Image 1: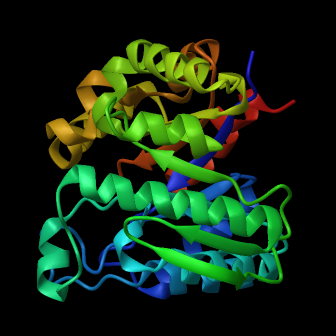
Image 2: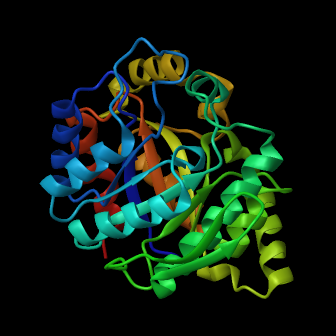
Length: 312
């Protein structure tokens, strides 16, 4: 059975730096393995709400912690040229002593691109750009030099040095379940495949598709760490469960969050049982989108009642 790494997703919308730093420090103190941020120019649908920039925030958090791994769920490929991103990632991995998780996606919010005059295009076009970025990153981390000529990016003998601390590279996380564009990129390039909340009711089917794609290109699918993103409503005891469930459904009841399809709602024992089911399916990582935005109480209950059950 695969080991299970448990991390916490903390979208930074409406949080001050002190708010996010506090959660990162609590995660580190409690032995939670990773913390994940989002990468948007503003909170989706809420441009008037404060939202700290993703890469700057990750850099600050990694500089203030010693063991916690930090990543993004996921970086928008449209925001940074791939050579610049490769340089940024290698540098931050050096600064953090090898604790960067490099999540990357094709972009999901058209409005922020339109407002900023950033390229958007069809999903096929965005996926093609993402594929070229993944090829450039692969070269950069493997050799410290990139030469690439594609439809969207051209790079000529560009040095990326120093290379990352992590070998062979910081884990590249690609999220999504699209069978035409996303899963082929996962099969070819990703170290970690993350299944978003909205697809939790399709796990077995999407696993089978990914395995088939890996077989087509001669890759062992077991070399890809399978990851799940899920909303978790963790009640401290059975008496408080109805109130926690109601709160979670109010905040995350929409179809995009997958709370009813595959979310985690219950006491620690109930959550552990569900996680073991995913573990038996071969998933080795869970990134939890907590119902109360990673309160101290939830983080403490997660560490003591859930993560402790998966410790070696």
